[in-house]
Length: 140
Length: 86
Image (tube, rainbow over all chains, first blue to last red; front, side, top):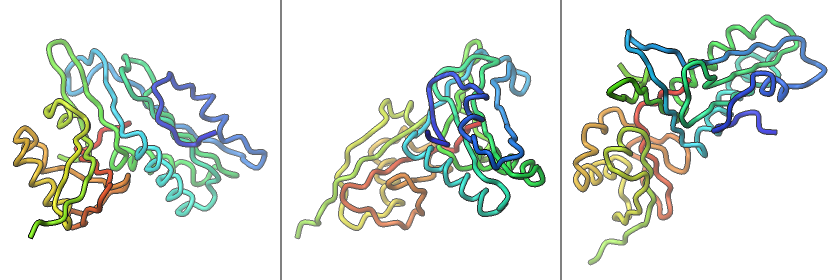
C-alpha cells in the first residue's frame, strides 16, 4: 500500500492511520485538513483541488524521507491528499506519522504540513457565489 | 546551417492552464534551449501566459529545476504556478 497518495476519493483518517500499522510504534499523530466555510471574510461555496499527481506523490514521499532523516525516532509518514471538487466540511488532506515515542511527533507533523504547502504541486481554487480564485500561501 | 531541434512536452496547471485553455503542449525547440528560454518562447507564442511567469516554478521529469537547466529531447516539462495544497 502506498504511504503517500493523491486521490479523488473521500479520505478516511482511520484508513490512513492503518497504513502505518507496526507493532513497534507507540504513538501516531495525525493532521487533518478540512474545507472551511470562509476565507478572508468571504463565504466559500466549495473548493476545487488540482494536482500534478505523478510529481506530487514523489514530492510527498520526499517530505516523508526528510522527516525520517531529521527526526530519527519517526518510523513512517503517510500523507494522502484529495483532489477534485470538495465541499465545506470535507477532508482535503490527512498526514499521519508514527513513532516509538511521542517526543518528536509534534514538531515533525508541523514540518510536514508546512512543507506540503510550500513545495507539493497541488493547487486550490476557491469558488464562492459569483466568482472563483486560485489561492496560494507560497508567495505573498 | 539548420539548428538541431528537440521535442518536448510542456504541461500547465491551475490558473495558467485555464488561461491557455489546455493542459499540455507538444513543442519543438532548438537544441540547447534552457528552461528560462523556454518560458520566454512560451510567453512570445502565448501572451496569455505572461501574467503567470513572475512566480512560475518549472519541473523537468517531475523534479524542480533552475531556469539555467538545458532541456533534452523527450523532456517532460511542467510549468508550476505557486502551489496551494493543504
